[in-house]
Image 1 (cartoon, rainbow, N blue to C red):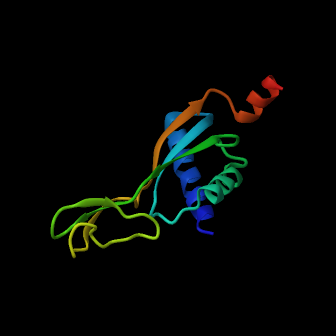
Image 2 (spheres, rainbow, N blue to C red):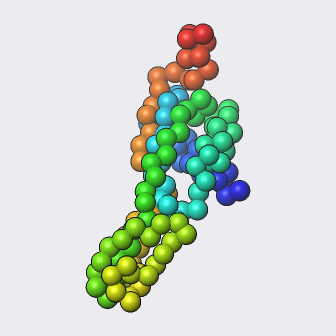
Length: 126
């Protein structure tokens, strides 16, 4: 389950950014994940909640923005959605994908800081 290593890496990067910005808590993290990144969204969400425990991200919401995979034919420059499993044969000519345009993304898009830790927020709400 490589989603755990991804979740831990995201938490580490956000914790470092939190230290640099003097943030005490994180409300939400938004990730961009390509269709070909090999990530199972539900597993990543589960692992993210575990990785956040006892960090400034405890209680943070994870939002995953999926990016469809697209390719461009080397012979005729046609672009198409490759799908999953990926079809790298050009739908217009006998060519093959010369370039994957999108679908391998795995990056943090943004982080929303919170003014107080999630546990304190939960106590005030409940």
